[in-house]
Length: 178
Image 1 (cartoon, rainbow, N blue to C red):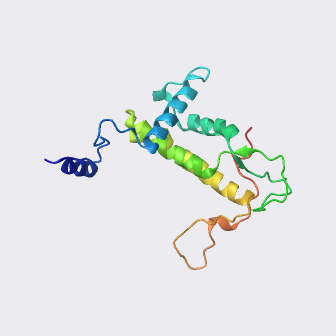
Image 2: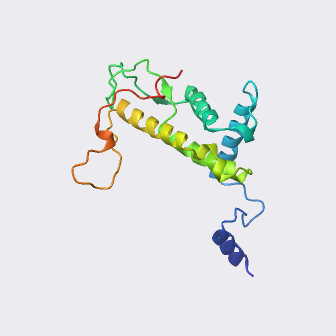
Image 3: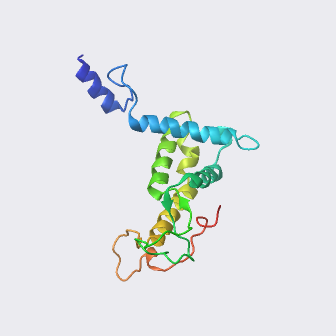
């Protein structure tokens, strides 16, 4: 069997084995490992420390909120004069947060890493409904704060308003934490 046949077989079987032993891991694999180590470090630093088998979606939400302090995306608060403006003309004191896309990608990597490190897909805290709801709220709130209307894509139904049509000025669980 030639090396190209082995590579093709590995790809078809979903193997992560690289064709050359000396090749460094991909950028995605490196980031996934770094994210996994960061999350585990976060759990160990909790008081009391949280063991991975006891980790659940609330711990993941707390971790995402913790990461907000390192964010680089300006998210205008409801009372800000620039709330809803895509290109504000001046700086303001609104907080920097993690961008929705960054959080979504992070959760995807952690979800994969959890299962690669022996976790069950049925108990994966990164795959919980609560995490999906949180990410959707972050996406909607950040879009509103920038003045970009977020409309959920739905199947076309006659005369049915989409869920994103109402003007909900509050962002539950997103803008309230510090």
